[in-house]
Length: 88
Image (cartoon, rainbow, N blue to C red; front, side):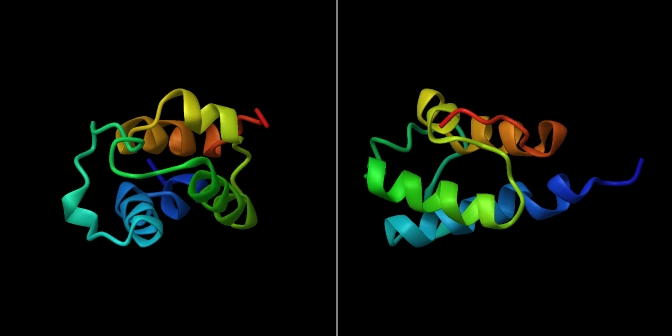
């Protein structure tokens, strides 16, 4: 099965790198199931990620990500149907 644009664009490795960049960490330091809020992710950094991913075509909202703040959950949201959630 061919990958969709959302799957290529929002691969878990890319998400881990983007998250690590805003947290000033290394991607390998962030476990997939860790609560990102406990790693220092705040609302400003989360909004930065939302805007970055929207600019790359994601249709995802702040609330979608804030409700499930783990790398694994975000990878699922952003790759399922190309990240077509729209909660603001």
